[in-house]
Image 1 (tube, rainbow, N blue to C red):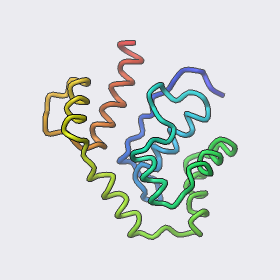
Image 2: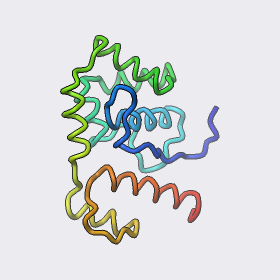
Image 3: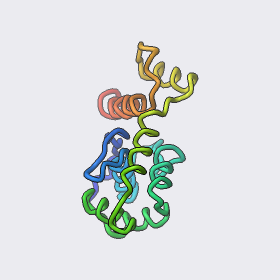
Image 4: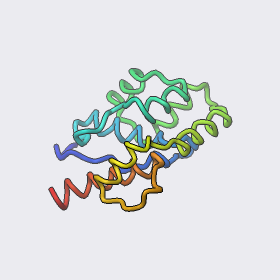
Length: 149
C-alpha cells in the first residue's frame, strides 16, 4: 500500500546492514521507494555515484537488481540474502572493506561542497565528505517538504 506522498530516503550512505556493506541499505530504500512510485523528486533510483559504485563493487547487474526489487518487493534482510545468493553465499571481506573505505573517503569537490553547505545553511566550511553532506541534504529536503513546504 502506498500513500502517493513522495518520500525522501533518509537512510545514510554510511549505514550498513548485516553484510557490512555501506550504502546498500540506502540503495534498497531508494529502489523500494522508486518501485512504489513514491521516491521524492530529484532522487535517482540508481545514480552514477554511490549507487553505481555499490553495484559495481558487489558485481551486481543494475537491471537485475531493479527487477528483483520491483517484482519481489523484498524486506531489507531478504534483499541482503538475495545479494549473498548472487555472490555464491560469500562476499570477500576485503571487497567490503575497500568499498566502505571508498564510501567514507569520498569528498565532494570544493565547489559542490560549498554549494551544498550554502543551500542548507551549514556554516562550517570543513564539512566536505559526501556521506555527511548527502545526509544533511536529505534532512534539508525532508524539512522543506514537511515544515517549509
